[in-house]
Image (cartoon, rainbow, N blue to C red; front, side):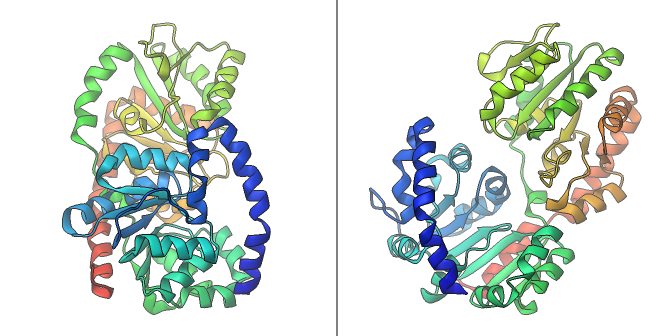
Length: 420
């Protein structure tokens, strides 16, 4: 099965090359670094690194506290790999020159062999959900300790992986640990072939995320300059098919709350033109973040067409909604607004953190909305009843305080099983 997988990957290389070439037409900087996907590098990099891989923006955010720990407590330099350009941009914004960055090579023996020889990693950390058979195999061959950290598996992914359980049992056999978010994730990894002795339930590292003091300190001034005298409803990480729902909800809410402003932060800023057209079709006045102007009383929608400002937008909110959950995406990080003392809502599709979503709902620290009507009801409750809003924030903070500590548990497992 391993050799079939490798052969298929090589056969698909021409398709990847065409896709990458076409993408490079619009993103020249991205195209210039295509050799990194094959393990070729134009310059010498630091060796003996702690290597952290995070596919894109969400995983980079999850890795943030762990990377900061390594930078503060370990003598080895940190190498960060991502699979996407937005992931790279987020690494750049968070860490600057404190870490090195390259794109993760494709999962083929030649590229990964060159990658490991070039960087000589002392430790490999794969964030959340990625399973790369060749990468795992080569780390074992080169005696590189490898851990999957903040690991999670949805029910749908589990059912898909079960078809390849014998193969995955072999893939998992050489890694040093799978550090999962919940007991449910532990059960699912066992179902697809991971042995119980390599699985540790360490919790969700996102609960240990630190919000920079500057984000909170900047919020009052930014609100006064950009959104004077406005109630603010922030919807973060929207996907196609969601903006229509929130625009409809906004039009209803505006009748009850005339000063309400809707801030939309799409998961992919490249969708800006598409969202502007939606706003125009609904006769809503839209202002883009990159226009660098303050909203007027007539502004309905403030569209954040930049990367890396979601936390700052949440800090300005009177109410927040974490999107990617009104369509079958699986939801995004609900703890960013919570850590900023902002009440949080989310939709029915929360497979990416289903148990945590259930737990925080049980603790009355969030509200789940099934449709537009329920969004309107929840936002109206929060904006009109200060006591209900504060109860939601207090319960959410209590939940986080009770469940934090994943970073400490994660580091303890890694240090127990390998020396870095």
